[in-house]
Image 1 (tube, one colour):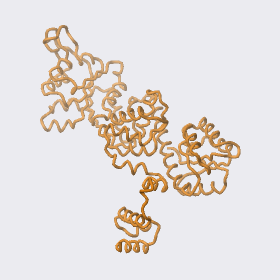
Image 2 (tube, rainbow, N blue to C red; image 1 turned 135 degrees about the vertical axis):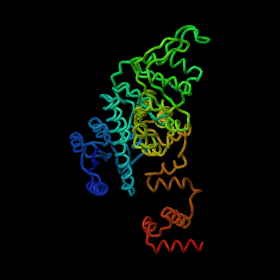
Image 3 (tube, rainbow, N blue to C red; image 1 turned 60 degrees about the vertical axis):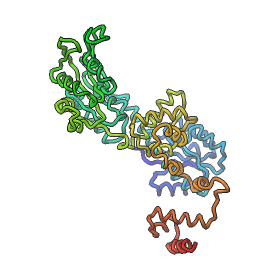
Image 4 (cartoon, rainbow, N blue to C red; image 1 turned 30 degrees about the vertical axis):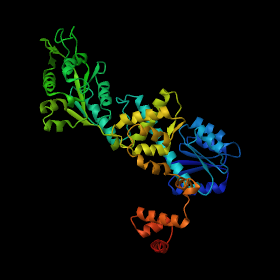
Length: 471
């Protein structure tokens, strides 16, 4: 795990002292430098953390130093700080890849706390993604199943024990959780990996055709059967047959599947010859298959044949730490596919992603990211662009977007949002009372806590109560 290291680069000693005191009190380890040369020496020595970089240094401009930092430590988030901010300067800084741009001023401390926190979140996400990419280049049998959730990683690890087994594996999980990805991983990791992996969607084939698709048919078996055709079982010989959505199998086919699992032989539709196959069965379902057994919808004896080694995948809502990592992974993939250079999500957009329930799980998240990549215009996915993509998908949680957009903003920015024009300005007395009422609501009418948050004495709160009652 990355240590919470911060490098402060500024030539003004009093500011360095002030920033160091604040950052240390926030729990960070702080290193300082007063010139670009000192900063580069620290970075080239292996520093990896967040860098606060003054725009103008005695020996170079901040942008010049930034490019050299990027060459040495491409992951390190850089936050520019300056006493004389201009729009052009901010645009230039973000264009070259700076994480944030903060003007020195009265709200420097509050803005810095939020910016640094977001920068460390980004750094952690980038490192997770880098580690996952490295692991996929090794012997990882589940290269497309991305997770940083310990419980999910443990589930995948237990599956290694069945790689070379003939035992049937039943993978349960909601739609979009990656059941086929896991099935392919089991096949790839075992001693049947040179044989075929044949997938059958039991819910996607009409019931009238399912038997002939599974077992094949002889010439003349039915109208249209002009020649012999092998089925999925024969195609999977010496390999793995993956029965997706096995809970959708009709009862008649359940009985035939049970016989195949018992003696590994079957007959084609319209045929009399017994055909033997050497296959490994992996099945998957988005249903609670045991519940289906209890309701009489699925054969109990077949269930036990299929679920020799059962495993249940976690839905995405139960592994929220995976959401930003998966989103960044899909962002890189589809950004490259679309010929764009989109580097990241805005931190507020990440929070918005994490607030979504994703009933469609990883598949829904992937589709959402692909959509937002198509409509994105810059190097960073903005909250507005993400909201636009959500509007075309499942937009649960959108009522809280406004609060998410304002999260981490300075008081001045929040006021600008609340009072966008002259007509919205209200009398100071009314604002004071409304603000007081809101504080009491948030603290469940606890006057002591509200007074502490407002940084006033209890007597002031009581006076406000008296003023309000006299309106």
